[in-house]
Length: 123
Image (cartoon, rainbow, N blue to C red; front, side, top):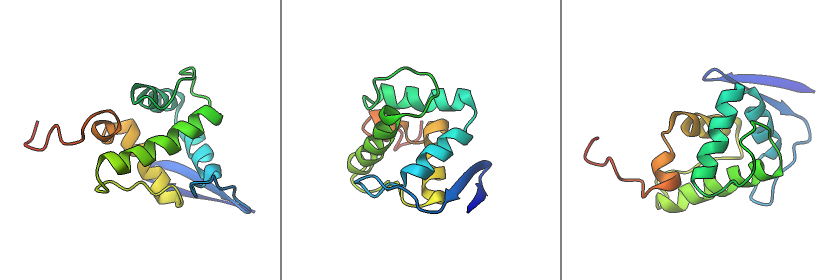
């Protein structure tokens, strides 16, 4: 059984019997959401993860164990770095879509590889 949800222009599929990483992340949805990004967006996400120090693989737009690990590690780092202000829910489709949107748009960049409050007074 397969169903698709289109959230904010990014399609995410849900399959019966999903896999979960030790962190509780829906790794099947992480993979599928990544696959629905256009190739330049996938490479951009990998580059963001690399700049943040979470990804050391090739910037090739391919989803593999290194990309998955980097996505989960970066989400945890963002939560810690923001002191809980930013919580990325990797257990829901909408949370994963929001995460990808934040990485692609640069909205999460300050928390990913900065202190997070660089523009507190408006940039």
